Image (tube, each protein chain N blue to C red):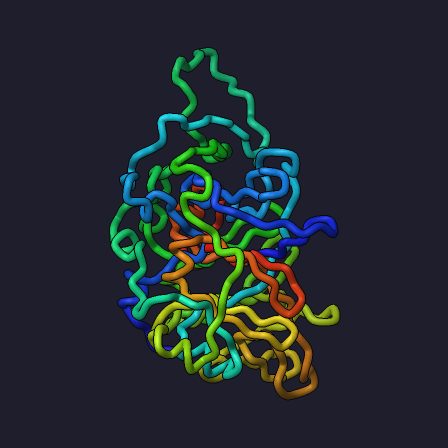
Amino acid sequence: MYSRIIDGKEYTFGVSGKLIMNVLVMYDRQTGSLWSQLLGEAVYGPLSGSKLEFLPAWQTTWADWKKRHPDTLALVKGYRGSIDPYAGYYASNDPGVIGETISDDRLYVKEFVIGVEHENEPVAYPFSVLNDQPVVNDVIGDLPILVVFNADTGDGVVFEREVDGQVLDFKLVSDFTLRDAQTSSTWDGRTGEATAGPLASQQLQRVKSTRSFWFGWKDFYPETRIYGVDP
Amino acid sequence: MKRKRNLLLFGLAATFVLAACTAPAVGPIEQSGEAESDPVRGELAPASPSASAVESPEPSIPTPTQRDFRIITLLPRDAIPAIDDPEYYNTQEADEEYDPEEQVLGIFFDGQARAYSVAKLSRHEIVNDTVGGRAIAVTW
């Protein structure tokens, strides 16, 4: 999800009908520039090169979200049921509409990954690895990060794990509660907030992450490392 | 956190949208005749000059250091309508239409929480909204 404010001006976005390597290309109605949804960047037009500010979101079930936010509003659907027009596609082996740009079979083409890119260093965290290791302490370049995965909903969130100059190592305690080894503070793994201990009420910074199919991620980031798979 | 196999098959790729799937007139593999090729090469890594004495006559097959930012046109603009004036339910109203296990995208700013049905988002791909004073684009 992105902010619609760029350089202090507000923009609205539409669906351009175009794709770049199978990913949505948006256009802004104010200048007609084309934006790659995955990159969060304008790739064509007057605003080419401009970047969108990433805003954190969570993907989970309706029941889970309601529990966490009992006052939430929900988008009007206009129909019952959750038939996703793409359900058949998700279950298929098809790598998108256009097909793959490059071939990389380190992972099955339609496997889900949580993708993170920091300073030109991309890393994919496959669901298959995260299922067994739902809390990952990793480093991408100079950035120590934490991945917290929910196997029930497929929700994965990524945070920076440096707080006030101190790098923390996290372990899963129960459900979504984490504890850091350095101060033994407990943390809510979904919001990144410390709930008890010396660091109580500290907030971990959210890092931009993308949940996507393997084939799509590696087309955008062919040199990607794969956590838990690459040696 | 127990594992649900179903989700891995029928789960959702947060940033993947395939424009063709929802337009009845266009099949999933059809590409518009006016496909533009505007190659915008990603400058990911400097191309290393080949030392080979033999020139390869082949057209470029993307190497791992090249990314193909060709813009492929599949549908006309706005064939998939973004939502510009989203309307919302409270939780009781939403329960009439949302299944408990239904995938949603959730956001939370300045004390305001909103949920967006992923299945609904698939049909529109973009919601332009303002939440908690923030102008946002919810994209799928």
